[in-house]
Amino acid sequence: MRRAGLRTRVSAGFAAGALALSTSIALASYQLTRSSLLAERERTAVRAAYFDAAIVQSGLTGDRPDVIEVLRSLDTGGNRRAVLRRDGIWYARNVDAGVTTGIPARLQDLVADGTPAVQRIRVDGQPAVVVGVPLSATTAFYEVDYLQELEDTLRTVALVLTAVAVTTAAAGAAIGWHVTRYVLRPLRSVSDAAEEITAGDLTARLDPATEPDLARLTTSFNSMVDQLSRRLERDRRFAADVSHELRSPLQTLAAAASVLDRRREHLDDRTRTATDLITDEIARFQALVNDLLELARSDQPAERTPVAVADLARQVCRGRGLPENLVTATGPGTWLVDRRRVEQLLGNLLDNAVRYGGGPCAVRLSAGDGTYRVEVDDDGPGVDPQDRTVIFDRFVRGRGANARGGSDGTGLGLALVAQHAAAHGGRALVDDRPGGGARFRVELREPRC
Image (cartoon, rainbow, N blue to C red; front, side, top):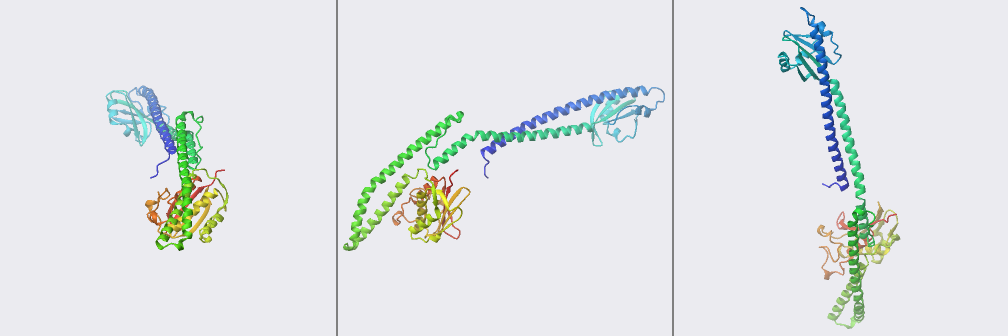
């Protein structure tokens, strides 16, 4: 499974932290609010119950008091229900509606023993608080105060706190996204500079004054690029010097071989065979030196100019005796590329198809989504999957290629293709062609406006 990006993980962390914090605060706030409201409501219920109990007690004086009338004289409003237990009989101001059955037996025992008691209960599914007040040895007054309104209020508070927690988490995610955008900005600068260096621009550097807190990273990066630039320059100069030094004796050998080749009819068979071998090897050696010289300067930036790439591809095919109708093009006909590099990578791909792939069968050119694409198909055995990651390295050949001595290839053709693609900010790939064979694809990035 693909791992989420750093920015996404940081934003998720901010959101999770904000959610955890807001949830904790919301829970604590809800509990404090609930406890405070319930305690205040209980105190109010107790005060009201004692006040009503005093009225009832004063109304029960006399020999034969009217208990129902006494209870009806109470102003209990819509939330409270008052009942009286006298000599084992329950009295209520109106229909009982389950009030007496909802009063816990334990609470009744306490009140019967002369101890006032308060307890939260549920009557017919509704929350309530019951207050029991002993009036005499045989009389006890109970008042049930329903808390449905309070419960609705607490539910509203819970919904509001939940909405606040969710909103806080969303705000945390937004803050995390914004913060990581700011924090990762220097890393994007590093990435952009690395891409420019990969494309061949070794002058790309980071400005230490942009992010003072990352001065060490900036200094280390610039120092690394300086050392890389110096090393590449040494390697390039060495390869160029060696190639130049080899050209002079090669030209002498080529001239001598040419003299021998012109007089081959005067030579015996063994000498003629030896002459042919020398001539072929000198030609291969010259191609190798030329490729080394090309590699020595391939790290230079691409010099982009408008190129009619389809015409260039047909020209490359003609130069190798291949049919021009191999070339098909879609999209813009003119590309902003380095003509010399594109011409060489086309030639190298075609040469590779001729040597190892049974000849090219299609050359496709297309452009879109900011990328130029060159595809060359062949009819060969394809490229072993184990070789696809290294076939574009220098002096590397696929398992299906001939041994070094059995081919006129230098082992640098595909390496040059990869170098030219990198100079354009792109890459070179190889895959299977539907129906058999290999498909070499080069992607070149369009220049930025």
